[in-house]
Amino acid sequence: MRLICYRAMCGDAFHLQFEGESGKNRNLFLDMGHPKTYSQILKNVVSKLVGASEQIDALFLSHIHDDHIGGASRFIKDIQMDCTLENVVGRWIYNAPRKYSVEKKRNDQNGVLCGIMSGDKVYEHILANRPSDLNDVTEGLFFDIDGMKVTILSPDVNTLNRLRDKYSNKRPLCKLETDETSIEAGGVTDDYSIPLSQFKTDKFQEDTNIENASSIAAIFEYRGIRILWLSDSIPSVVVGSLSKLGYSETKKMQCEAALLSHHGSSANNSLDLFKMISANKYIISADGINRHCLPNKETVARIVSASSKLPVTLYFNYDDGRLTRMFKSDNLEYMRLMTDVHYLKDSEAIIF
Image (cartoon, rainbow, N blue to C red):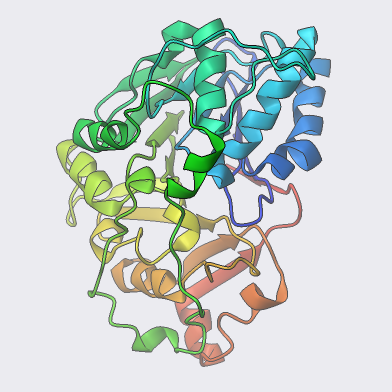
């Protein structure tokens, strides 16, 4: 099994590859980052898959923030204009924030359906081509992809209903409404000057963003390998789902990799969550120049505090100056005992 963490700035675009029980190569995409992530990176990846007679067997789109779904909006435009891409996605896994009848109004410029929000574009495309893929994806759902067991941890039904209450208009958004949609919150400065040992890891204030809370999060299990994907989910929902599956602080979920929530944000990764999981690798998708000052060093401190196995292994998919100075304030010998830090090269795969 191979996991590729594409560079999506402060966004998510993961690619999980494995040989299924059928003997065929399978490709799962977990979000598609920003529009530029698709046009500059994923377009070529998809082209190579088509050339190899493969497909995206399942495209998971966690939620409607543009750093996760924007690339899919650009991808859909290519699908609509290129018949060779018509069946490139085997299954869409997405929770539409609202459902409505689409007026068949065409854009005079290019002859394709045109929306304002990426979320609406994705919904309209699935509705027109694969309406059966619009069933809700909520915690407790299990399904199989050629031997790969997928267990959904987030969102719960109540959170998804809250999202749909917010976006209850029975029509696409107009341009003037885009300012009213939620954006991700983040700090104005980073916390990298604080030594890792000085964080009060038990203090926690959870992200209140309803779009993030509605994120799809899941466990992927295949031939003894387990990967936890958290997208931008909130820990209270994930912890509740893990508890229902029988996991606890004394019976941790063991996994090869945990893809951390919301680019390593301290508001989306709690000590209680890390006390319930034990990962051989913790993966953070974020560049070091984003305006939200993510990832937070406090998140790393919580992983270290909760871990029974030290050092913890951290993977960053960027190696720019800000990220590489995250631990400059720490004692070097202490850091060697607590952490094993890796910076992935562009499109480098982690092999399990």
